[in-house]
Image (cartoon, rainbow, N blue to C red; front, side):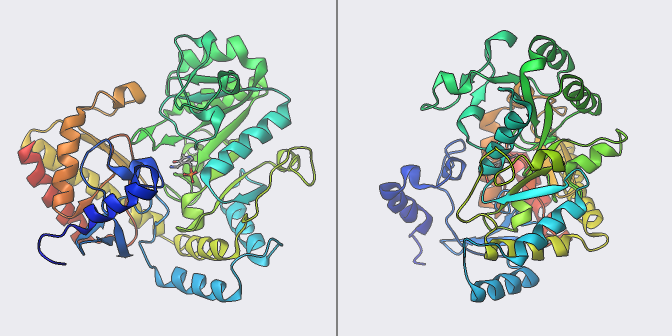
Length: 434
Ligand code: PMP
């Protein structure tokens, strides 16, 4: 690189001429934080290098999938071997069966699973399945939870419970979202009111058990219990969107964490993505056998995909699941992640910065707030300008966190104690400038 050439900037300019906003998914454009997105050249372990050959400690990991770090040898080997046997057949393969078996073996609430290619597809299909299973139309979701960009889910809360929501995107007709009810996360009173008003028309309640799309907000145990009880009482299906939390917070997903507090707890349908594909386009939805058997070709709920169960993606996912299933994997990952958050809290306290954080397994969040928020509105009380200064201060020091204050962070098995220490030291420096 010549001294004054910023290859990220020139790539961004080139990209903007041919791709809307220069990116293929909006958050990558750094719109919230400003500045030039880093174009990734290559990645290894806990790091990636940008177009200027600048190295970053990566706390995004492709937004969750890279739980082993980049370029894990066993995963790389499995993908290379699978690629030699063919990219895609449009006919069944043994590896799809193996991956389905591997998933349901580890997540007891799933008797059967169908593989798809993105979290959006999985979420959208799960809702169609729930509507097909119940013969009902209404769906219930929570503000701040993201379940992909299917039309019916791009909705924010309306002015009142009876009014339903408003679209968060142009191009979504009101008719398409008229059945979507949006409630406040962790608000038991609202939840009870919604079921009292509409309970017998609700096909499903869909939720992120630990919401990673409003940074990191846990559903409280009483709230989770009420979600389960009300769904059961009114005959609605409880859909757990574990696209982010599945195989990320624990081997059995977030549902296994809640089952420790609520005996017998299980969702009816689980949506997964990210880690189960190990960085390849792969996602899934699954649940009880009688529900899953309503899917075509057995049942009347149609769902399909040309690349579903792709042989290279399933090889990547299987190799990843094999590695995370090694004894002690999640204990080590969780303690390293917790160590990061604890050290950041200590540094913030030293520097007089209001700050708090939380983590589960290899997923974490932190806030420039004095205490942990419980819902989207509380998350959004964060001083955005201050967050942006933190983001850019870290970026300048070779630490890459999410370029938006409402996104979670991810630690991989490749992050070392030295990486954590370097991150904390960099953050401490930035805290002094806030
Ligand atoms: N659900 C959750 C919880 C997610 O975090 C995401 C993506 N971040 C999705 C669904 C959508 O997945 P995809 O981007 O693969 O469509």
